[in-house]
Image 1: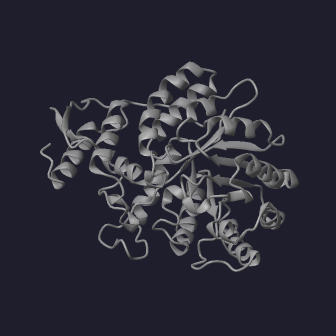
Image 2 (image 1 turned 135 degrees about the vertical axis):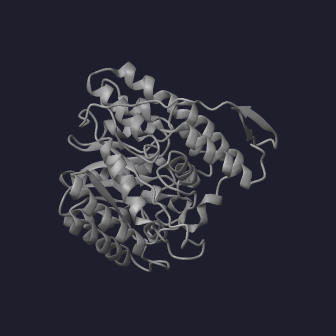
Length: 384
């Protein structure tokens, strides 16, 4: 049966969904790349309100993390994909970190958790306030035994006067970190408040400061996550990293080529798009483990169109498409998000996401996905 999908032009067009599911199988554990999925949170639809603190459905949220671990992926917790700073405040994030880290221990799953400064509800007056906020969150993550991801800080971006302030703040944090951390450079396309991070709007100057931070403390940096959606810049930076410091791609536009790499190296992965793509990502990297680069690209290349659609500007609203796909795939019973973010994308955008996901065989039960999409369209007055 066909389904009528709305388009951005105001028209509808006919799409025939696939009737058979696709089976993806990987040889676990994954060996050639370290692969994290930044994971979304499942809201409690009976308690969630757009203007209230995040109400999380803990059972379904943790079940989704077990799904990621079962496919051999690590979980990057309490980061941008979990609506950190966009519906999930520090109180909710701290509970998420503690619960997910405990779950990781129970299944021997890999986990890294975001450390930021979002408990600061007003502008920071000094660098010391920024450092103290980072330290509070770092202590929470380290107490759980999870790896720490030092996330970019809106508060630091607002108070820092130049590159030297970033060198001071990150230097103080890295000196006291108990274990090597992942440094996260999140571009302003994901968060406009991070414009000019590392002390300059010029990306070459910013990159130099970023590398200076790493060079001063290479033993405290496990790796860097680069989310600039610029493959060439990532490759250039990757080649300048000290030996032993990993590059984790956060480029949701160009991840297949960056993970495959070249004769001079490759990127590992810490990606929001691997939240919906976990089975495909696992199978693809498993092929790469055997040296089958063609098989790796054959699986992942067709997913890029979907990823670029989900992450199109305004990029920060990609979480809406991620949660839509989790609902359509049967990982949760509703399409509700903390902060009311399910309304952040248009119906034509969501319809296109459904079509692209169905085409690549993303849904374990295509019939369920189709039925749920028809219901969503009907609620919005589209005759499906």
